Image (cartoon, rainbow, N blue to C red; front, side):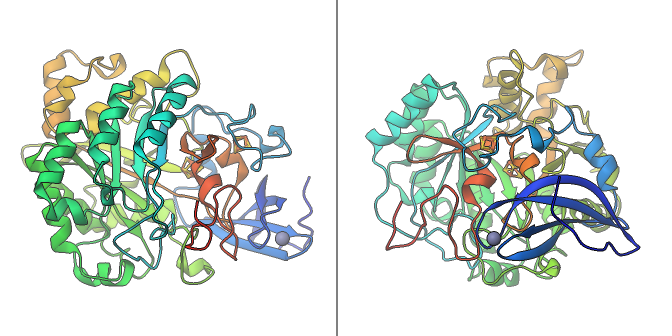
Length: 463
Ligand code: SF4
Ligand code: SF4
Ligand SMILES: [Zn+2]
């Protein structure tokens, strides 16, 4: 089954087998999950480049019980095609339909962050509006509508972003989200007004901490005032905001509780916090050591500790419609006294469902309600029947004004990638050649910065 032949130390146990990639050459190779106490490592060996291992899970809750809580159970990677993940497109072996579809609308950026999954800040050859309209037509013909995520680079460098959003709506995509660092949103009120008028549903705002030292280290400059101004403008123009912190050990892992408090203080404009433990693909300063990694259980534990137990590890569940070890989420209602009440925790609190009749459509509608600006949830056409309580009005009011979602996604890089996880992925990227590719398969890069699927984003080799 695997060629990881070595003497195991007494404290080590193999708890699973899977397939991964060599971080040097991206060759597909067998891999094992090795538990050492509560920690779990992904270990593998390339015939050419030798053995390597990386931490993927540190501490409680126990990996195996967490993984077993996912619904449906993860696939056996052995049943995936031998060509996975080079055969993406999606291939018939992929286990999850598209829930959220990311469109790269520019490679340009107005920051030069030392760590960037997209290695943004290159090229001046953005796809034109007519090209993007063709993409939208193809996507709708190929199974849409999906929730769209406009990404880059920094999408707000495009003056025609409102036109892109209008075209997406006109083509039948009801929910359009924006990945942004917020610089232009903070500075250009007319632009934010245009985005709102075009029907932008939600902003995913890069937000790494509550003091400028964090931004100087992670983003290269002080940005906190800019983030605050961006949130205020979105609130004014009724665009929902989800804060997206990239968590880097020793730099901002002590800011996790403060970020939640910051979000709570800005509800209902801020709809949620979506943590992303740092992954090492695209642009990063050096090959990562285990000390450079921050895993999902550490995040859940830090949330509990840094909020004095207001948030509890036990509030979190694996998100449905993907591999359980990819993400976690918890939903809260904020009581009048400020206390956080965990809410539901049922599977519909996720944007994705296993491929089934109308599951994905219902789930997309639910996300649209939850992350749209307060009041805009009432515009969503179809209530999600599983979550409607005795009073629909009370439910919508709670969603509008008092609900906060805390979630996280543990993106995979060439060291940590588990193909059983990638095969369950519902977050997809449209390649410029038209293929639909799971996010982690699209962005991961080898030690030289080469990608499996994505053209290398540098000035000499533009996409
Ligand atoms: S990741 Fe999914 S789409 Fe890509 S080759 Fe593997 S099963 Fe197919
Ligand atoms: S993007 Fe990566 S971490 Fe997220 S669901 Fe897909 S495979 Fe898992
Ligand atoms: Zn290799």
